[in-house]
Length: 135
Length: 395
Image (cartoon, rainbow over all chains, first blue to last red; front, side, top):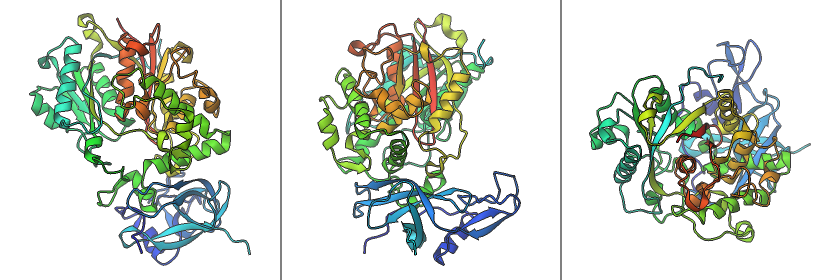
């Protein structure tokens, strides 16, 4: 199996829990205790209400694809094509995340997505988005 | 009276452009020496008159092999300058951060004549290899690109593509309309001796080129080159001694939204919209006064976004605006990217647009000269960084 596509990030203290939770298969972000806003990338401060009291909470899926692209050029020797999505997390104050997309078809804007976790660069576990299956 | 009363309208008094090309056999230091000596001579000055020096990006994280030019100290020492003011900076108003700070410095009296330069050797550094992704050096990445790169969005082509995709979805912008940007720029490049691409480009060529990151294909992406552009920025009180000058009427440096590509709230806009708004706040001139526009095109979609950001058409209408190529052409009331842009002229990280604007305002643009060229706008940057300049002809 080839190496995961991506570059290892430098991780600061605010971001460490995100990656630790991800390695347990949990998509977690900080939420403000005062005003309820979720914040991402992870911060120790709420830019909406200037509170420093934040608690890590799990993000409820589905999210909604805000935009996407399918990459055809192999920048680092990786197998192509692969798709990337920018996802609005509608149940978490509409914060966004970007990730690889795995599904039977190319993603579309407005499509609902679920999340799963796969190996990322540098031994990290990272979120990858998938088609939302309605039961 | 302008809204920005303390902006003393500094001027650009000299322009120097080194040899520009693919895989040049010249060091970044030599290219920089060439451009700076030309700029100083163009201003009618000597190196001993230069008391300010600035560059973008200076010594910082190298996004690509060849991205960094020679650093500030290397050039101060090489040229033996005695400086009252100096800076090398990466974070700020896009690739013009050092230029705009130099303008502020001469305006505030910290120095009189500042040389500002941008040098890139990305073409020779990449050699014959295909373009790599950002951060392919292997070190962990910090800052606002780190999350993108960790997710697997390795290239600015991926990031720009997601903005293009959203613009298409919301406004019906088409692939052909992106193509008219590439074709319009190529048409100008045919008249620019410095341009990298000198062969005509047809819509068929454009549509049949390979996909890079949907919807962007090969000719939607700019082309790395080697070269240096340098200018002399001078204090307003030096104008009586200058043989020619361009006045920096207003600048846009605003940053009003979350500065992460994937978190930018409305991806049918960019930081360009903040910068343009800020620039228009600082002047009594309006869109109707502008004779030409030099608008960043790291990717074709950026030029469409800049046209909208600067208010040359309504939001979402830049696609129809460029369709057919007339708006780009010298026959239009406001030609766009008359040097060929970075798509055809070469990626000088915004500084090719500046060089062209100065040449146009001084009537030195040869076969691509815009008639009655008195006011030009330059918009630089894509995604979450932007800067804009409103320039007027001196004498």
